[in-house]
Amino acid sequence: MTTLAIREMKAKRTQLGADAKAIMDGATSAKRAMTGEENTAFDALMDERDQLDATIERAEKLLEDDRNAVDDLPDDQRGRGGDDTPELKAFRAYLLNGRAQLTEQQARALNMGSDPEGGFLLAPQQFVQQLLQAVDDMVAIRGLATVQQITTAESLGVPSLDTDLTDAEWTSELGTGSQDDSLRIGKRELRPNPVAKRVKVSRTLLRRAAISPETLVRQRMEFKFGVTQEKAFMTGDGNKKPLGLFTASSDGIPTSRDVATGSATGITADGLIDAKYTLKAQYWSKARWLFHRDAIRIVRKLKDDNGQYIWQPGLTADRPDQILEAPYLVNEYVPNTFTNGNYVGMFGDFSFYWIVDALAMDIQRLVELYAETNQVGFIGRMESDGMPVLAEAFVRLKAATS
Image (cartoon, rainbow, N blue to C red; front, side, top):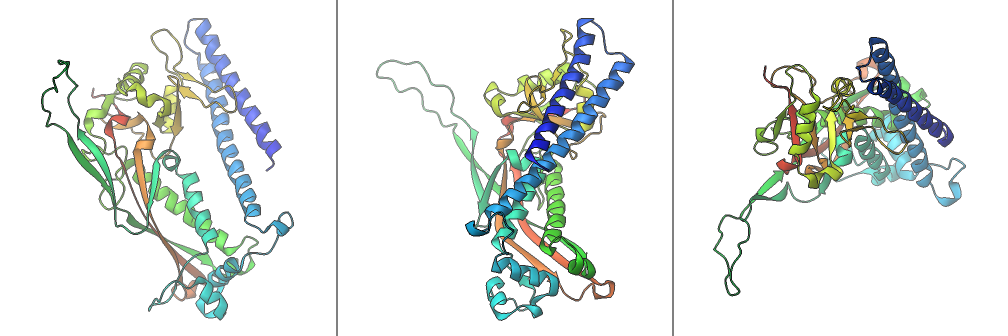
């Protein structure tokens, strides 16, 4: 996929948004709701636009991967497919044939400590970086959250201002004001928890596939780790896993930050307006809406009291679609059951969701376990934790109780 092709897709995306807006504007100028035919046309345009968004995102990622692959080559090999580094050659040999087929030099390049059970090797740094970057691309919250890494400690402590001082007092020239003992400093603790996944690959595929075996393993690992983390960042209960955004907790976002949608089976314009203005204006510059696509389908057709649609398409390639003048994220793991009291969305500054990763990551090759099925197993492990660290930076939307 070339840069020109991506540019053409973005231009088409812009035109689809303009066509959808024209349908909305036509109904608005006539002071009426969209007809059934207009609704069908509008939904078709927006579905095509959503599919195009996903295609553009994948194309840009592949293009970036290609650029990174060239950047990793020595200067005299760029543009002509230079050889892999010795570390990558050794790692590929390990993935294909196991430790027994490594030369002494390759084993020294990859060996990490002394493991009495055998099988643990340190992946080349380039492989690990590609895996972590792919997880970042797949997990939407990671791109907005504050991500910390720890190397020596077991956990990360985040100081929190639990109780602030009262306001200052007007006093005389020599006065010092009354004593205030209300200041309380607390702590949020994030402790990386282990997450692991096993991948099985056919020996025949490893030998014959055009794609390199480390790429095969990386693609499967990035998908499994990405999905697992995304679900936990949304709805994790904090018990040996991240504390999710949609889990009510005094350690994260309490129920006091919940706002009713205005409907027991959907979302209303008034509910969204209430949610936005529950969040302090200081957070608006970085705030985003977070919804499942089912919720976006509802929101796109909502009007305010003046008959104006609260959803507005971005009409240029660098301007995102907006709800009440704020951009939004669509995520498959946001709750989407529109019944009494369920969470269905959020508005907040996601830089106040903190993620902590431990740097240690290893790949273990299972040599004999799947011999009968002519497969090779690989186990990937990493450690991660996450939680909201400032409740007032978020507002959750909850379906109203009928």
